[in-house]
Every structure is written in structure tokens, then in C-alpha cells.
Length: 158
Figure 1 (cartoon, rainbow, N blue to C red):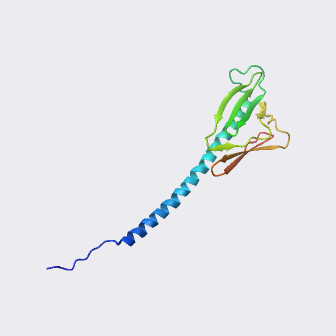
Figure 2: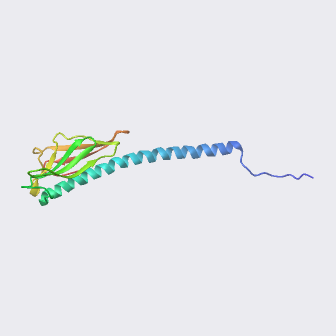
Figure 3: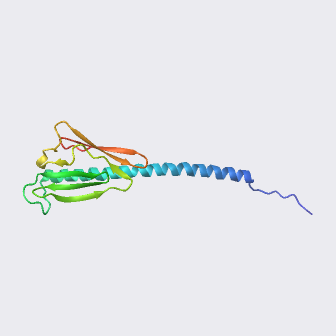
């Protein structure tokens, strides 16, 4: 005797529809995460550059001479050496490198027209001409996503 048996299951078409919906949602989420990650790389590099600029500015204002700096402290220079490298230096009779930074391989920065930007001691501002603002663009090379840092002649860093 065969009784009527009811099978509760899913058809192949129902399973394919569910899998295609899940893969579409995953694909959109992955692309969004990748874009977010790239933007965060630029933001992180920009914050590190701005932090090094502020550190140079604070050292210049306080007159803090690093070891090896002989003579009168004339300021601290933020020197963009290439699109991938910058250096913070104390300017005395002999320049003393405070830090030398290489950016991540996929991050680049523009070289300002006035290079190096020198933060002068005792809060005298920078070596930029009066009313001039220098801008450094930090760019993620794969996507061209970019953020900017600006330095005014008074030493204001934004």
C-alpha cells in the first residue's frame, strides 16, 4: 500500500533565484567595501601628512632643536622629495632630518610650488609669501580619489 506522501522541499528554480539574489547582494557589498577601503587609505595618508606638518610647526614654535642641530634654529622644513616621499628637517647651520616618510605604493601627493614649506620659529608663520596658500593633494592612484591639505602663510594647516 502506497500512501500519499507530501514532500516539502524547494525546486531547482527557487534555489537558483535565492542564490542569484545572495550573489548580487554580496557583489554590491564587496564593491562598496573596496571603495570605502580605498578612500580610507587616502584619508589615513592625509592625516599622517597633516600630523607631521603640525609636529614640525609645533617644534618650530617651541624652538625645540633636535640633537645634531648646531647654531641658531631657523625653522622646520616640510620637504616633499617626490610624489611618494617627504622629509621633515630642522634647519640650522646643518640640516637635521627629523623624519623621512615613504607613502604607500598606491598613494601619491602633489609637490607644492613653494617647496620646502618652512615653519618659522616663535610663531612667525611660514616662508610662504604674504596671503599665499599652498595646497598639497593626496591621491589614490588607482581611483584618482583625492583629498587636499592647505597651508597658509601664517602657518594655518587645514
